[in-house]
Length: 94
Image (cartoon, rainbow, N blue to C red; front, side, top):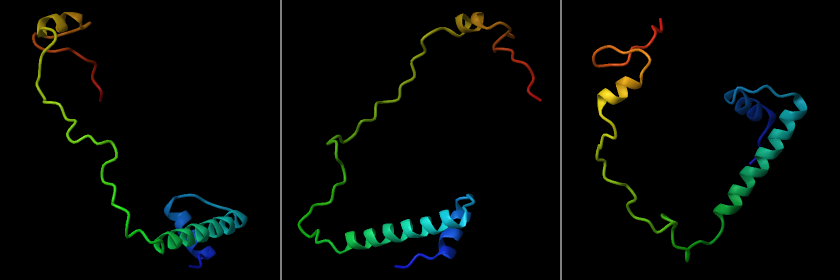
């Protein structure tokens, strides 16, 4: 597949980068080689190769989600420089 400078310029604009004419020509050439290589990969015979879905062998690595408070609320509030009855007082943002 031929990748021309117009296509390379369009891809560069999608990426929000500006390129010189020399860099644009180099990008077009590189993109053309990449597309050709991907085309070559598509022609390989992979009929005897099993798909790889999981490489680590792990099935479910999630832990149960149980809340366990470490410190009582009042002890944490006592650590704050300023507080109200039940919460930490912070400076206004707006």
